[in-house]
Image (cartoon, rainbow, N blue to C red):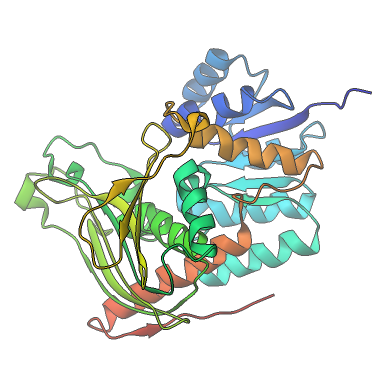
Length: 358
C-alpha cells in the first residue's frame, strides 16, 4: 500500500526558500509542499505561484494551525526560529530549522527538550554534513587513518562585506541574527568539526570584529560581526583555530582541516558543487586528493537535496540518516557560539562550554 506523502509547510518566503527548501522538498517523491508563509503578501504569493504551492499564509500561526500539515521547515531571520519552532512542536508538527538553531543556548536546549518530550522529528540545516567528503573523512578518522587528533582548523573566508554596494540583510542586525558571520558560517564550521572528528568543544577564546561603515562606504549601519576568530580547546585535549570573515582580500579559504599523529585530512566544503577531500601524510606539507567514487561527482547543491531528503525520511518513519543534524547538534553548536561571544566581551579570555544535557 502506497504511503501518503508528507505534507510540509514552508515558513519563510525569501531567496533561500527558493534556492533550497522548496525545490529540495519538491524533488522528494515522499513529500508535498502544501503551504508557504511569508510576511509580504505579494512576495509570498509570487513564490507560491512560481512553485505551484496551493496555500498561502502571512502569519505562521495560521499555517501551524492548519490540520493538513504534518511538518514545517523554518527559513526566517534567526530571531524567529525559537518562537516558531516552539509553537510547531507544541502543536505536534515535525520541524526542520535553519541554522543557527536559536539566538542563545537557553532557547536551543528548550527546543531540544520540547522536541524530545513531544516525540517529534527535529533537524537543523547543517548542510556540509551531507557531503561525500565529510562522511568519508569521518569514517577515515574513526578508522584511525590520521591517528590521534591534536589540531582542528576551520576557515570560511570571503570578501562580500567589502562591497560598498552590498545590500542590507537581516544578518547585519545583531537584534535579528544574534551574531553575523559567527552565526552564519561559524555555526557550520563548529558543527562540521564536531561531526567529522567526533570531538566536543571544551572552551573557546575569541574576538568579533565589525568594520566601521565608512571604511567600505556602506550606506547603513551594521551591528553584527563581519569577522569572528577563535581558539578552541576540545575535551580530548586537542586544540583548534577557526576564522570566519567576509572582509578578507586575496584568496579565500573554505575548508576544515584535521591533523593527527599520522597525518591530516582537509575537507573542502560547499553546497555540493565542490565536494573534495585531501590527505597528507605525517610530517608532510603535500596534500593529495582522496577518491570519493563516481557517486560523488559534483552536482549543483547536491548536499542541500540530501539534507532535506534526510528530514523527509525520518518524518515518514525511516531510520534517521547518520548525517542528519538534530536539535541536540543545534544546541551543542549554540553553546560554542555563546561562549565565543562571552569571550569577546571578556577581551578574549577563554570561556567554558556549557555541556548541558537533557
